[in-house]
Amino acid sequence: MIEHLSIPTEAGTFDAIASGPEDGRPVLLLHGFPEAAIEWEHQVAVLGVNGFRAVAPDQRGYSPGVRPEQASEYTVTHLVGDVIAMADSLGWGTFDLVGHDWGGAVAWWTAIEHPDRLRSLAVFSTPHPGALKTALQTDEEQRMRSQYMLDWRERSTEKRMLDNNAHALKQMFEWRVRPSHVEEYVQRLSEPGALTAALNWYRAGKPHGTADKVGVKTMYVWSTEDVAFGSAAAFETEKWCTGAYRFEMVEDVSHWIPEEIPEAASSLLLEHLS
Image 1 (spheres, rainbow, N blue to C red):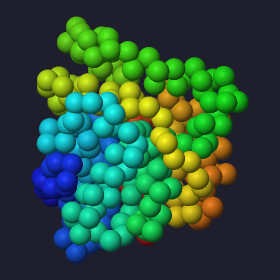
Image 2 (cartoon, rainbow, N blue to C red):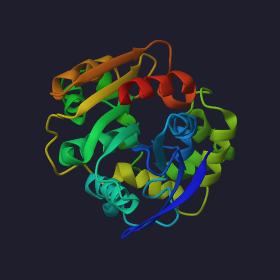
Image 3 (cartoon, one colour):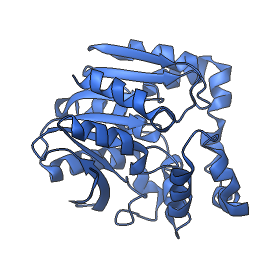
């Protein structure tokens, strides 16, 4: 049911998982930190069975074939460029885009900068960047939640996360993600240079562009137990969406929505895409 793909681009070759007929409606799914494409394993399979062509890549730094050394090569401009380059390589003129965590941020920025390429947008956990900026300016709780983004820029982060059999890295998942996936994430990020590449997403600096409003059809899913993003940014996100907008709040679920409640997340995606 799940295929393994290589997606060649000028930046290098991205590894990916995929499912569904080649001529199915294309859906690209972007993972977060510290995960990989298999975060979307359940959703990719379900979408494939339902006739979509679902592809989830290991993004820049996570794919060994696209792992530049400098933090300056992990800006939002590079990450959005990768999305468009992968879609072009796959022969997709327009496509549905799905993202979670950092992948959600990249999905928002892709919708802002390339609305003509997207049929729809679905984001789990991560609020619109404009909404997050507002929350950081007005909500002390969100500033506290987001402090890790600054802390992880420190060069001691890799050692701290991987020490003691990667205890700190494993703890991030709050025992809400299946152990086999956690072990695979830890194994991948323990490869030489891999964790540094993933952390370079945080070290690359703020986006240069303006976080404009999004006009494409959008679904935003936020969970009440999310440690990274609070309600202020979640509720603010609607103000940044001018097209058809659907907000789903899931109770008693952590930040790791696609993996903690895979069946429910897949159902929401199918409803959104229909």
